[in-house]
Every structure is written in C-alpha cells, then in structure tokens.
Image (cartoon, rainbow, N blue to C red; front, side, top):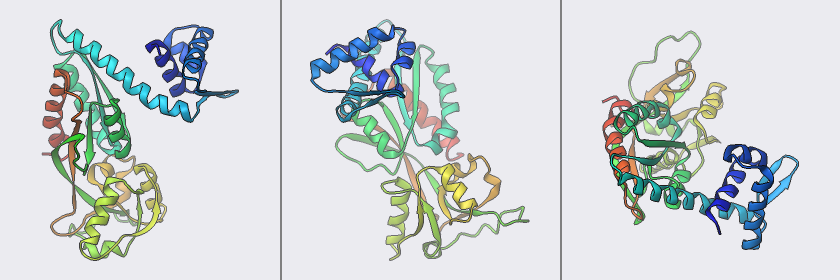
Length: 303
C-alpha cells in the first residue's frame, strides 16, 4: 500500500467526488481514479461505490477511511518532528472541541497560537464527545476539550473549569428582563418536559446522574443533538433545555430566552483537557496545552 494511494482514497471518500478530490490534490482525474483502483485491487476490496452523484465509501471503505486518516496524520507528525530539529516550534496540532466551546475558544486560541508559534499550524475540529474521543484514539486528534470525560488507561484527563448548567426557557412576550435570579429546584426541573441531547452526550448523562441522586429521572420530551436545533424547539414550545451558559450566550438569539441557575449549590459540569496516553506530545502540542490552560478559564468561565 502506497501512502499516495491512501491519501487519494481518503480525499475522494471525504469529498464524495473524484472530480473535487482531483482539483484539491492537483492531479488529473484519470490518474487519481487509477491509483484508487490499484489500491482496491491490492486490498481485494471495493472501497468506493461510484455513481452519478459522486463516490460513497463501502463498508470496507469506511474501515479504511478511519485507519487512513490516522495513518496520514501520524506521517504528518513524523515530518513535523523532523522539521522541528531545524529549530523553533513547528508542526501541526489537531484540536477537537464541542461546538459550544469552539464558539468562544476558537478565535482567542487561534490568535494566541499564531502569535506564539508562527511556524506551526493549528487545526480545529468540532464534534460530539464520542467523535472527539474516537479522533484521539485513531490519532486524528492530538488534543480534545471535553465535558465530563471518563478517565481510562488510554487518555489523560486534566480539569480546566466548571461551567454552570442553566434551565433555558422561552422569554415570555413583553418580558424584557430576566426573572428574579433565584435558582430553580432540581426536583422541579424533573417535572418539566426537556429537549435534551441523546445518550451518551456528556450533559445528558450529567443531568441524569444529578437527578438519580435525588431519586428522580428526566422528563424527556424530545431527544436531539445540536444546540441550535434544541434552542429552536424550545422557542417553538416543545419544552425546556439544560445548557451551559456559553452555549446560550453564543446562540443566534440569546435574548429570546430566560436562563436560571439549577439547584443550590448550582448544577455544574466539568470541562477538561484530554490527550492520548498512547503517543508522546510534541513540543508544539505541549505549548498548545499551556495556551489552553491559560485561555479557557478567561473565555469560558469568565475568570
């Protein structure tokens, strides 16, 4: 198996098109198709289903795509490490963030990264917690910031901050100010219809655990993954939501909702820094970890 063939296959699978992949890679489409076909012959597997709309990975193709991404990332890391010997912090650092965190962290972190490591490159991916953990395991990600990650032998978990979880409801018409700031009791929340992410979303699991501790369980009206969709449904009257403060403040229309603290002491969720224990960190990655440690408390928790 040649790395060039693997790279060609990964690009076609990701873009869903031989034509688009050929443009991105700067190669002729017939040459690209021939190399992918040679890879299929060598592996004795059909990797892509070609149709009028493009190319879709087969089951075998999906398996190779996951491995291929990790392999290509590791090759890039090896090249970066060798390049580092020429001096200075260089190389590519891949960071995974939940969407609500990416909205507040991506810009300040990118600015700090460029200022401190001009010869290095930062790649940021947004995904759900399960996807970010899979990225760490496969080598596609070097670092992830996650809510309530569970420690294991494969990952190192370092707490960063704790975020308040708030009960989010539509703002009543004519109400221009938030209701009195008193917290809503957790038992009361258990009676409310909730629009909440599906398991194993970290906030969903944390809410269920907190309710179970007082002998309750959530009243799930709808399960949906994605902050924007959850807030749209709340505004439409489908139920209430439990979200982090940053998820609400960085939504398109935060003023359309009211938010209340839950419980006393308040219901909070930990935000942690996660790295793989299977691979040593490069100097650029270590410097990025230091930047995240410094910036996250400022921009996420407002400290």
